[in-house]
Image (cartoon, rainbow, N blue to C red):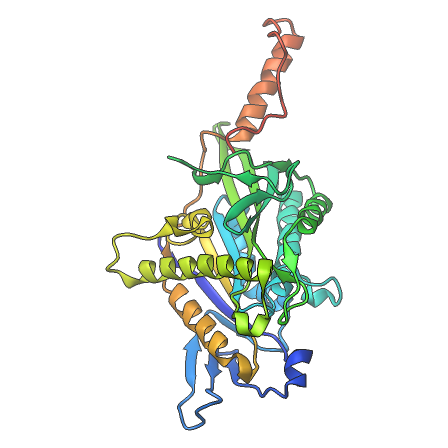
Length: 382
C-alpha cells in the first residue's frame, strides 16, 4: 500500500553568532497543527507564508519527542521486515547532526541514531521464538566519491552497482556484525572519526560529506507447520551535509570545492523530489548524483521514509529557511510503496544455518570435509 514520506520541521534556538549580529526571529510554529510560519524581514507588509507538515518542533523541542512521535513507528517497522530511511536536511549549521547524532546530556536530546540502536536491540531482547542476524555499514559521499568509513582504507573510492533484486548497492562495502548497542556505538564512533569535516564561518565543525549508516536486520521464525520464514529489514540513517552560500560561509579553496559538490548533489536531490511529485515526469533523474542513486529506494520505492527539515529562526537566514520549507513541502507528497521483505534469496541467516547443518553432518561423519574447509565469515552479496 502506498504511503507518503513523513516530513517534520525542527527549528533550533538562535545561536551565538546570530545573537551577536542582533538577528530577529522570523519563524513561528503551532505544534498542535504541525504548522510553520515564516515572515519576510525585508517586506513587513507581505503576508507570512505558512506550511503544514507531519510535525512541527520549535526551539524548545526535544529529540526524544520527535523520536516517539514520528521515528518510533518507522524503526518498529524495520524490526518487522520493512526498509526504513530517516534523513535530516537543511542549511549548514541548522542542527542536522544535532538531531541525528544528538548529545548524551541531557538525555532528552540524545539523537535519533542512538535511540534507534536502543529500540532495535530492545525489540530483539524481548522477541519470542525469533532468531536475528544484524549487520551494519557506514559510508560517506565526499566530493561525489563514495568512501567506506569502516574500511581498511577510508579514503578509497567505492563503485556503485545495480542488482535486479536488491537495487543499488556499494560494491565491496564492509559489513560488520553487531550484537548489541555497544557494538553499534563503537563502529559509529570509529566511522565518525573518519568523516570529512571542516570549519566555516557558519559552523566550526561542518560536515563536508553526506553519510549513511545502515543497519541490516534478518529475522527468522517458524510457522505452525514448522516451516522457517525469513524477513529482512534495513534502516538507513542519513546525515546530509548542509546547503550553503559561499558569501556566508566564507568558503575558499578545498572548502569551496566541497561546497560546490554538496550543493550539486542537494540540487539533484531536489530535482528527484520535484520529478516524483510532478506527476508528469516519466523520467526520475536518480542517476544525476551518487546521493540520489543510493537513496533511490527511499524516494518513491520500497521504503518507509522520514525527513527532518532543520531550520534557523534568524531573519538573516530567511532565504535559506524558506528554501528548506519549500523543499520539505514538496517531499511530503512523495508516495512510497513499502512492503515486508519476505524470504529474500540472499538471506545470510539461511546460508549460515545451511553451513552449520553441513558442519554437524561432517562431525557425524556423514559427508566428507571439503578441501579448504568452510568459510563462515563470508558476507558476499550484501
